[in-house]
Image (cartoon, rainbow, N blue to C red; front, side, top):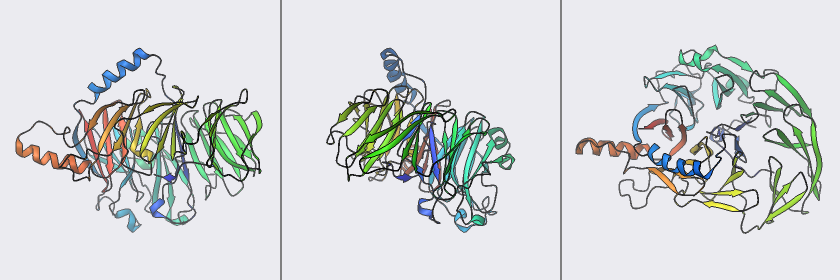
Length: 464
């Protein structure tokens, strides 16, 4: 009952909810399975039109002089010589970037994670503390200023997810082994998972072995409560609540809404379905339930009064991913490399004028939503008339979510410093190379820097 494909982000780069699923077998091509069906964020509210107009003007200046300033490499044959697995020592694409307190964390598809210091521009350390450790995903826990890594190990035949928390201060000292393991009592084998919910400050785990869901406090990792029900097919998290989706009957699907804090059942009901038609997705957003079946209209149900709003199937087609903007009461949909903005009356608010995504699989690791929820930063298709790129390089586009206007763009034309002709030619080639096949993107709002990773394992810093 999910619309999202399993692919590499996430992490939501802007925080929110991140799920990592254990793999059924050794599959290096799809090692990172993240639930992209709903990437949720919870940030400050944009409260007035005045604030929005200011943000548009401010954002133009904010990104006006951003240039390529630094390059890091996640691949280091000498530094990786202690790894026991051959594929860990091979150059691999960057699939995830996280930044905190002047440290840039870059995770490669091989499972190697490197930490770089922005002050010294040196690599601090690798986060792999065991020779056979393959890191699958990263999560920055702002509640206790730590980085959580989710890994699998050769000694376990790569079958179980293992989590570890390491304080940022230890990583800054080059002590990645100073962390401690999390959820050791849980058997997180396929199809088990661990999900980090930054919105509510919770962690959800699923042990498939005994069909038990557990909710932990993200601040101190204490167990809050368990859910034991073999008929639960899926759990969706929203601010303050959880939606339990049960095994479908022929003409309806049983649903429960629980308090996220203590698991108390707030509402228990059935939602009617069209017989013999598969469910494309069921999503929860506060009091709104979004239900879409194959070749049917989108239904937006208000669970408080059972009122249903329908959006025509030709107007709203099943997206490959969602991003919910909680404070703004909006959601983004991603389909066929395009982004659209909707409200919960089923109205299309924004279509972006210059924001064609580069990747067709809608990997949300190439997308960042600012904390004000007013800008979207993505790796997009480049200008077709730019002869320097030969169609291989894209651009980093910054667009306003409210208007759809592209307020800034980083491409091979404008991301070069004003130097002499020879230096400019060299810089032009470097920028073009840096904009080719970007596989991960992150915006550090405190430092006003964009970090990108590419398919060669390189990380580039774009700064003004």
